[in-house]
Structure formats: structure tokens, C-alpha cells
Image (cartoon, rainbow, N blue to C red):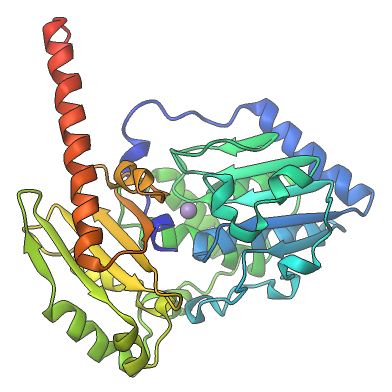
Length: 362
Ligand code: MN
């Protein structure tokens, strides 16, 4: 989903905590034990999954099946894949939430920073004996009994690729396709700050394993229903750029979606056009969901931490790409976001002043 999208600058700020060797060993241990005993392994990811979340879960599922295991991949209902992700491999592993084993021995959770982001699958975090968290969110609450969490990883599929290597499963073209999809989704085709040398090395290995990268790029970014063109035009024509925080924002409501015959998932890419406004520091797009609530996507160019602001509004994400759900209209929603951004700026100013007083500013 949108706020899980682009990678962040977190890889550059502060010392990223690499995954300790003991965690890798524990992860491989519980997964191989489950394969050995033919116990089902539930692989879950966050609500409204994006290419990274689904790519990671499905790739791991394909690897476990290749190893002789019983993987089941699931996410919160409605369990419907966005059309742009219809090419992902291993979809026959998908199982609806209500058909999952209630007390699985092992649950692996991908690209999910906190339990609540599992939506209707949140019970898994309590019900499974071993909970393996595979994630790259800097805000991860590390709710697993085993945590493969590395905020420096450009995508969760980067960590999943290493996990599959450590399981000793060779990368088929199908596994590589799912891993690559997460990598290009979260690096925005290797454009975002989080794109590391390791990301390019992984891409090279994945292409060598048979990934049809041009096909994937066309499906992910260069394919829209015709109705999208007019909807995009409408959304852009009412965009506003205002405030001392140089915030550019617009919205898509139910009537826009109905007129265009589109689902709310299909208009996620609008933020990628809105955020190109040179004058803007922050970009926001509010999209109305079928239940009337608003999915709010935010992007920052670097100075502002939209991740923290969104987290305070009940959402989450990364420093430069985050989101939350709102039950108020776009104008009021953007106002609340502005207030959080202003509060964060004040707090940052106060802590800087405190440092100066203590003579630590230099
Ligand atoms: Mn991700």
C-alpha cells in the first residue's frame, strides 16, 4: 500500500541495525523444522498489500513449498490483489483468513511494522508459537519472537532473498519475480534514496535468475485503464499548493472513482505526479475508500518527517513516504496533518535549542 512504498532516507540517518546472526539462525531453524514435520507455515503481510509485502510473502511461500513445506499466504480481507500485481507468482498459495489454521506453529509476517497493520490477521501474532517478523520499517515494533528487521534494507524482499538463500532454496524465475517486484516497488525503480549498492547487486542476481523486468515495469507503472487519465486530470486540476510548509495536496472521492470505473487501489500512483511539484516540500493525496474513510498518502522531499506525523495520526510508514486513514474530509484531514508537522517542527526546534544550551550544538 502507498505508505509502504518508496524507501526512505533512514538508511543514511543513524546507524542501521543489521540483523543479528542469532536471529537468522533462529528463523532458518523454525522454518526448516516446520518443513521437516510438515506443519503449515502461515505467511502474512500488511493490509492492502503492495508489491513488497506480497512479493516477500509469496516468494517465501514458493521457497518453502520447493523445500517440501506447507506454506499458506494470507492477508486481511478483502483478499483481492491489485490488478497491477496480477503477474505475481505463487498466488495458488493464497488462503483466506477464515480458512487458516487457528494455532499455527510458525507465522512469518512480512513488511508489517506493527501488529495492527495485519488487520484481521492480528490474532496471528498471539496464536502462533513462533512469530517471525521480516521487515525494513524503521518504526518496526519488532513484535516477533524472531525479528529479521533491518531499516537499511531497501525492501522487505531484500531480507527475504537472504532468508531464502539461507534456507538453501535456489531462486526459480517465479521466486525471483516476486523478490524483484518488492525491490522495484520500494525503490521506485531504483530512484529513491534507499537504493543501495546491495539493491543493485540483488537486482542483477534476480535478472540472471530469469526476471522479465520490462514486463514487470510496464505492469507496475505504465499501465492504466483509460478512465484513469481523466481522473488524474481532475485530481491534478484541483491540486493546491499552500502554507508555510509548502504542502501540495489534492483528493479523489467516490464520485471520481465511480465515474472512472476504478478501485481506490488503482489511483495510488497519483501521488507520484503530485509530489513532483518543485515548490512543494510535502505532497498529500486523500483517496476515499468504499466505506467512506479516506486513505491519505504523504511524501516528503527530505526536510520533513511525514512518517512520524502519520504515525501520530494512527498510520505509519517511512520518513519520506507514509500514510494514515482519516474519517474527516480532505480539507480537515490535511489540516490535522499540518498541525502534526508543525508540532514535530516545534519539538525538533526545542531539542536543538536544548542541545545549544548544553554546548553540544557543534
Ligand atoms: Mn516495504
